Image (cartoon, rainbow, N blue to C red; front, side):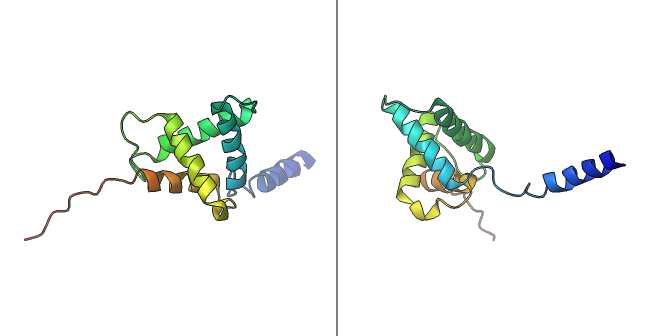
Length: 121
């Protein structure tokens, strides 16, 4: 019985914070700074550099053609630079979820093309 109660408690409390974002803008900023150091040939944290690149790539892959349109031929490095520069210009946003900030940066830089609307007769 104790094992069952413990399992139920872990289940309930383990998922109670499932709605929280995985990474905040502050954390993403820290990773962006390590990514920047790597591109400049300075000593950097490979974990943060890799996390940053992977995080931006993941958002690109999941939201591309839905919320923004990165031009054909653009590299993940270019997307990472766009997001990082956007972060540098918007310190007031750093407390927000990282995914939201990546999306905002990419939507600003690469908006969806305007669709031609059919005129009704």
